[in-house]
Length: 360
Image (cartoon, rainbow, N blue to C red; front, side, top):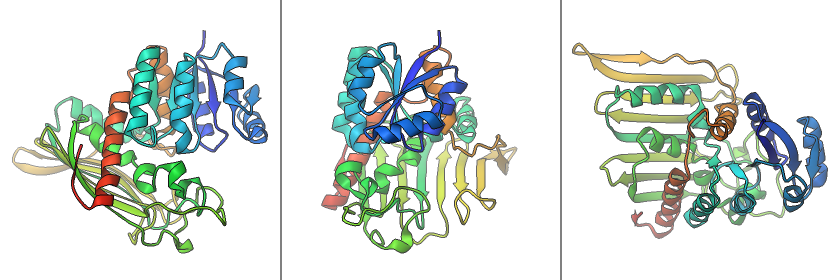
């Protein structure tokens, strides 16, 4: 029998989730959104037979559900995941895992108690470049990764003014929590060491300047809040002696949007990077996946060639969730890792607010 799954949230990410779930052989049986009209439209668009305006009603009306996928504003990630886990459902949730580490610990505990799988859409782990790089890392070709630089920078990428993205009570913060993918990917390559200390700074320049609005996101809300950072920079040390620096921004005077992890290992260094084009993912975008080593006394740069993946792992990540449930793959991420990541995010905001290093 195929795994039966429901999607919570009628937003654009539903297309990637639905595609991945179906490619893995799952059956999408329902979609719920607080806006029932939006739920009906999304269900029709994605060929989903049932739709609901209330999650509680859906869980009651569709008891055969095995799992749910959560695609809603950040504030509602943890409450909906908890509700689904307590109802005995497996959960695949968009990033960030929660607003903070305290909420993430509740999710981890609830998943363990319910004996259900809890995973998050850290889709950059599912990119072909990341799979290829992890193969080299697991084979020992890189050695120990001592240092890592994680970067997701945008020149003009504010996702709408006054909406939930820019309202801290709903989002948890700005680009630091929104674009945490590369921090996660860097820690993933490093073996997810336990963080020790963090020093970080946030910057608000340009956060209200409409010239820095991105080409995607949600409509502006004239009387809404914009009380989050425009950029964040920081440095994390780990109990293993490893270290990671990060730079994330929605609005910063960079040359172009860059999504990258660079690392320095004891046997080889490496890079996974996407340089976006002038108008986003256009013909001028450049992907790179490289290893840097020494062979026979000579320094060598090796290009790792992988298939193109325009969705940046979003479909493959959803496939992995279903394959974990049917026992054919191991999970690309775990609740323990998500908790560690949220401790880093919490620490970064605390350090930025106090101006001091924070012990994690």
